[in-house]
Image (tube, rainbow, N blue to C red; front, side, top):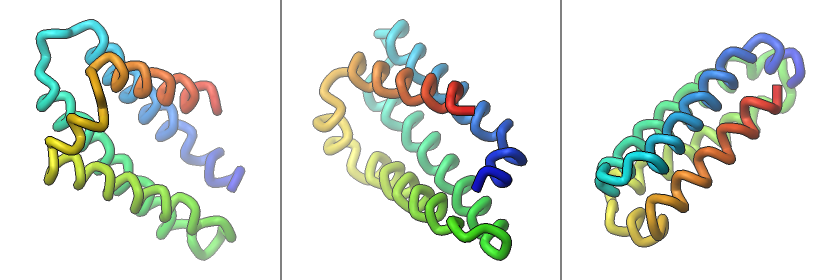
Amino acid sequence: MDELLGRAWWMLILRGTVALLFGILALFWPALTLLLLITLFSVYAIAGGIVAIVGAIRYRATHAGWWVPLLLGICSIGAGMIAVLVPALSRSLSGEPGNLAICSRTTGVKRCLKR
């Protein structure tokens, strides 16, 4: 798994940077509607899930823990699809845009610093 992360370090930094930008956008642009934030989140979650699944399938022959990114990718795509298909549920779960921004920013910082 360390070898896989060693090769894909740029992907983790890119994903963390996008998460940080998403969180900052949600925090400092209050005129942005919650529906647009949910749409941005769903695109981010689906794209991140696809990248995780492709990476897991690509390295399944050489890494024993290939199923972990596969499972995370499936969960990420599921969360993105729920946000797209049932935006009212996403709206009620997120509470207010500030909570969504804080969560995204924290996740982005952790992902950037993990490497």
